[in-house]
Image (tube, rainbow, N blue to C red; front, side, top):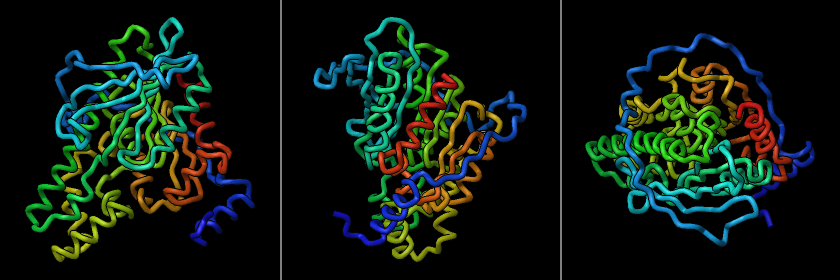
Length: 343
């Protein structure tokens, strides 16, 4: 039973107008020349490629007619907030012979699992055994919201902001290493690797697409650029941390934002304008999203070269209902159509 009247009214209103599918579709825009150099900021994500020392075990209870499911894990490249400092994933390994497209699906890091699980199910049902899926797992938040909320000095805030920026940087390097791992496998088609991310995972997906040319298609669902805008504007845990820090340290919003911007600016997808291939990107955003504010969303779309975009007429959380039967599985269908066309 829905007890929140505003939520109930939103659901009833959406259903009366055909479900959570109200949107504005923006076709692909400009097709400017892509830059041939790499921005200086790309050096932050450099690493020495080496064979991935991974372990795996078969999850027999998850096996399907089309896939063997392996639980894969390997050490992270650096600072991480995940258990035991590991990158972990479920690898849905097709039983069919031959080299196949491979889709990496990112989580919302310590938050709702439905979008990732729903997309993995959609990929399995749509492609059957003609696709491998790397489902990245993340038990904990990528960023330490509770640690941020607890800082007691200005110096501690600066150190925590630097730590958050490092977590972002390492997460991108670990995604690049996931691509290394996939390309070392005989069953993976090197030219058909895709990436899908949601919310915080969408921010990471966008950043990774700017620095990882081996990923040939990316669906970015409710993400943005300018990480300081996101952290300083979002409600929920980030909002809780922001209010606690500002009150305890006597900071204005502008001072809080400046600290975050100085720490995280190297991790901004907007720095990589010209490095994206807009024909190989699908973007979803939300018109009333206060977690990914308008400036952040617009900057990402522009930096990516104005790829095809679906702007849902909802807020950040309610837009995800477009992935459910209440939204006629709109986002899932559009993402699958995009992957069919590109991969």
